[in-house]
View 1 (cartoon, rainbow, N blue to C red):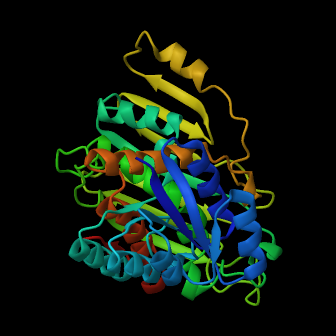
View 2 (tube, rainbow, N blue to C red):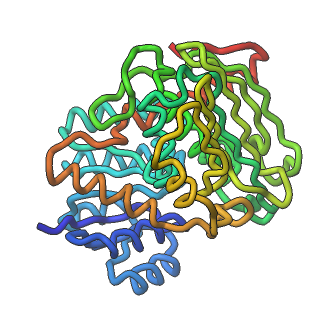
Length: 367
């Protein structure tokens, strides 16, 4: 059986979805929608599909199994509702939406229609990130002391000028909600596996999502490297986290750090430390060495990707392909999906709390 897929929103990330779909057996891209005719026709020609100016018209005209939403972040709700009205499953780019209230509207509509609603967080399908999470789930760090994520990136003014990126209404935030949300999701997912959620549950397994592992945040945000006429939201953010089991964490999210450097994830505890820089495992040290640890260090011992540090189009789509394939596999099998809506919601909930803390100048709890 072939999964017939349509894409809502033909921007840069839509090409990653289209390339991924082309690589997946049993998946077919049948249509894409956007309001700009020239862009739409170019996309349709490149990927051998049909262009529509309107998403609802596309869903009415095509026999679609899955709608892949790649519109601007603050415009994910409307196509999701349109798909739910027509009984079409939804796979939505990060973030699911720019507020938890809008996400909850999507979830309610999906539940009422009996459709699947899943998210995209492609770093969960990065083999080196999975290696680190497996170690956390196995208890190799002991009780965690810290779980940190750093995204020290740069974006030129041209990236924001005249674009939806950097606007409050459509981006919902800046360096955190757009770029650094991948790191926020990855670090909470890893920390959950180590028990940082405090509930004894390795949250984030397919079908095993639990409460957000982050209990409290304190944060500052600022716009430091781009003028008010260029962007409306933050290009620099720092936050301190306290997880539910007492683990501490730091988040750095920036598009203000010229020329941009590689993103990092770091977890450490009494019994070990691991650190990923982009796709390279730069630290993998444990109190109890295992026979396969040297092989792990060798396998992930270098990175060839700039990872979007300065150029958003330098990101490889292999992890997107794995992410999309996993969603389609879950549809086919009826099994739970790793990034169902409740799981994909967590990073937005953390970032929402960070923004509230920065605005109020005090810690904010996540209930």
